[in-house]
Image (cartoon, rainbow, N blue to C red; front, side, top):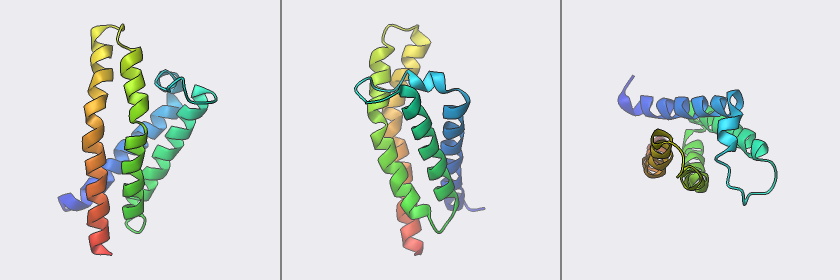
Length: 126
């Protein structure tokens, strides 16, 4: 399978794994939900996990891939505030946890660019 065809499936796999993790171990995700959001953190955890699973499914199918990739890019931008909140909230945690929280912030950009690249490649084939 050519690299360009594996890329959407790799991103789909990453999103699927993250989505499953939101349901399998929700408590760790609850802690990242910004307090300013209305409702229960668990609701937001499950909702974001469901969105990740839906995006993964959309990326796996060539027909829906361009739209799902655009939606994934928007999702990655949208969850940035949760990652920023996590970095703020975890500033007093042990160094490895603090480092992990801070490392998530710059990782959003490559994810956004990866998804945008998949969207563009999919549109080029349409």
